[in-house]
Length: 336
Figure (tube, rainbow, N blue to C red):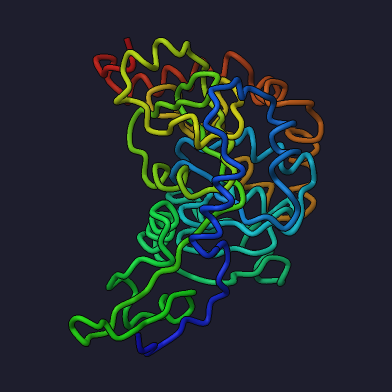
């Protein structure tokens, strides 16, 4: 194919599909075994300095903050992050010096809450680099190509835009129509972490509400850490197999952590902790504020349960549960 244009962005997370197939063949087991572990162990084993990482969920919804805080606690460095719909998770990682490069689709903002002081300051001072840009669809299709074992996905997305100019895509001459078409390269994150509503000890996962791109992400990631609100019996999983969106053979570790998305929202379970998010946005305006936040909520506690206690404990969590019940009707199937 004739290449008409090449994006200026750095290509990260790409592998020859045949090489990745060999990796999966030798590193992903189909043995039905207990994969339960701790966040500390999962991060220590799978998140290496310099890794290309991806966080599941969407914006401030269903984010595995348990793993995010553990990455900070273990002082992982020079991580490259898929900034697909990355807001609070990316912001605290960048602010605490863990992520040094980002491929951006939607990043550096807290949605209706405003922009991200920490991330913007780190990028403006060169401590974190935007190495490429893409669109939300572009990132989802990077994961889709990886899931399908293809080197790229053809699309009309980003044609004639500055986003395409600064992406890692290539524009080629379509051999069928003779018109320009964008080739969006596959992505294979070294490790992804996804928070789910429930799963069994083997990693068969069920998610309530929209999945966004977690279906594709789970299937293209080389290593997959699952955090879950609760572990349920395999017999329950087998009773409704159509609810299993992520099967066990994709999963490398299972971490049970109730309220594991806090301060973000877990659909049907608990609402955003707006007070805590507002605190982060206030203190992260300075490096000193970030350091004090980390000392209080990350390094000053041994695990996520202690973090929740510092954040207000059962009183705060009960409020967030009741607030979510006001938003999600009790007649929905998962709230019996």
